[in-house]
Image (cartoon, rainbow, N blue to C red; front, side):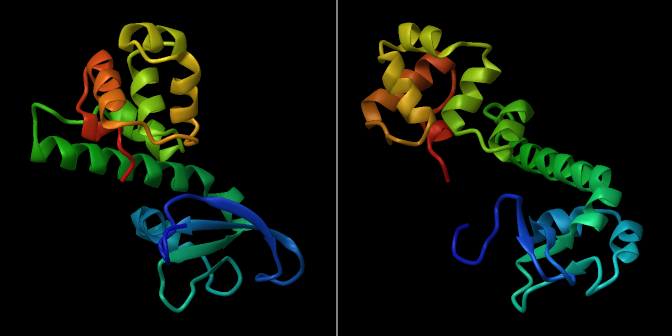
Amino acid sequence: MDGDHIHEFDIFESELFGGKTKTLIMPIAAYDAMPNDVRESLRLGRDVMFPENRRYAFVAWHAYERIRDDIEDAIDGLAFDRAKAAHDRDPSGAVPLEVVKLIDEGATPLAAWRKHRGMRQAELAQASGVERSYVAHLEGGKRQGTPETLARLAKALGCAVDDLIES
């Protein structure tokens, strides 16, 4: 969570919908991206709730199971929109959709680019001259990486250094 913004989905136990049950918390952008008929099928207070700031939505588990495919389609649509917007800004340097999806699924940018290139950590380490264990630490978010290290990794991956920095 970044301040009041929810960037990822989470599941937790709550009593929001009467009795202790699983509850999904989702970014409001994903909720808003679902088709109108799906959103209208959710009953406020029984299936879905919003905090005052309406930055995210709480969805009852029974409702989530019913609309799971619609939520996944909305996520895919958002990922596509992000990739298209990046392409529209700079057609020659757009981030591939696969990389955007991997990052949306929780991968670090470094891991997403490495997987997109079909490389193992050892292969990236050899191509960049960075120790494999250090690559693993960077991908796990345990290290930030120096500008020089990120430049070597970016060169080996064929992307910009900025593409490897989490926003």
